[in-house]
Length: 523
Image 1: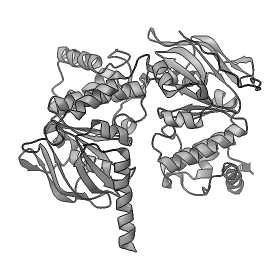
Image 2: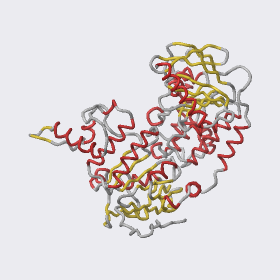
Image 3: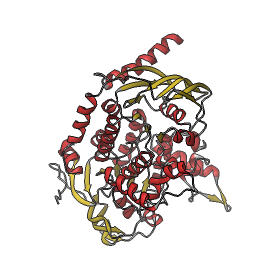
Image 4: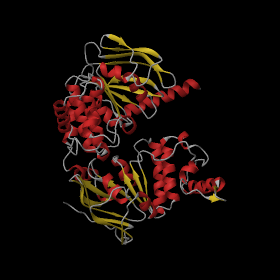
């Protein structure tokens, strides 16, 4: 194991860490999730916690914040050992966490969320004026133009995350942990978040930043700790570590798999011949999607490209019957179908993996095996249970095929990393042997190694004849995998073309060109 001490810039005196975790070990059912891992957090720094899904990042964070008890090792604050039995105890010590899924109350106001459980009181009642005034002062300090009296749920997810950070600041956090805060944000929203992070850093807060976007890591972070398979690889200064070096440290291998996908997809015919396996004619839904025509052929990957809110997900849901179209028709094979529900789609061998894996996919209290077999059991009917031998065969096959870790069918889904949860959801649909697979953000929020594995699976499925609709906010990923591109903007299709020598700049120009054309028309 390589353990790299942090480098000290010339002329700079290394400060004492505000938090130091030493030799942390945690095991679940005999499997070590962390094995002697250490972490140092310094005041006034952004510290990136790096590693593949399953490397132990979430477990380490939960150990620090009192969610998990540690089996061995120690946590020191300002050099003194502490034990946190609950998240409240960690928060009392100045450690706050903002998760990828914002854990606030959407029907309360911004101020009520910021001071929830800590509301100022007067004569035994909540002093609303004082609460709003205090919230406004914190928002102003962070440079956030958010009304404290507005209802949180009326704001986009980016603003809600900023409110969650403001709540952490209000409790005078010395350590702020941001777990995948940018996964659902556009470029402008990310920049606003980074402004807030820099402001907090400059005021001495130690910030832990967890993200799979390497460019963002290099833009905002000062120091990084790298984990792999539950062990500590090393601590590095970001400025002294290239992205290639970081990737090698994270996954322990070169990325030949990415190059192999490029070559295989490039050799695929851009447009398939024969009758389409699915054809949408004027498919639309009021307020969600304008009329769209789309054809999907056997063995083809269609990439839906566009910015957030462009209508990609709305189209995917109509193709699966998760939402009902107001107009248009959908042909599956040679027959016109009206998909009244996802069950009808599954019966016609159409599968859909939603972008909202937490709310529409993962059932955390069930095992990996149960999650994996849900769709197949639903298609058979609940009165016809899957035979035990078939269950075991299917689960073992896809755990091995998709390299799901830990390779334990009885592990609870809540204990799996995001990338491995995503693999289980993919397995759920592959078990139903679909002809058409619709994947909405299947690699969002997962590490580069798991992302490469899922991309390879998609390429292999298409080569074997499956038809795939692939949605990703990362245009590079869409271009690497797709045979044909459908570009969307403002909930309508604006362009369609074979993916032949198309660049990210080309796609952005298509989107921008459409915007300019609309502005000229309005003028």
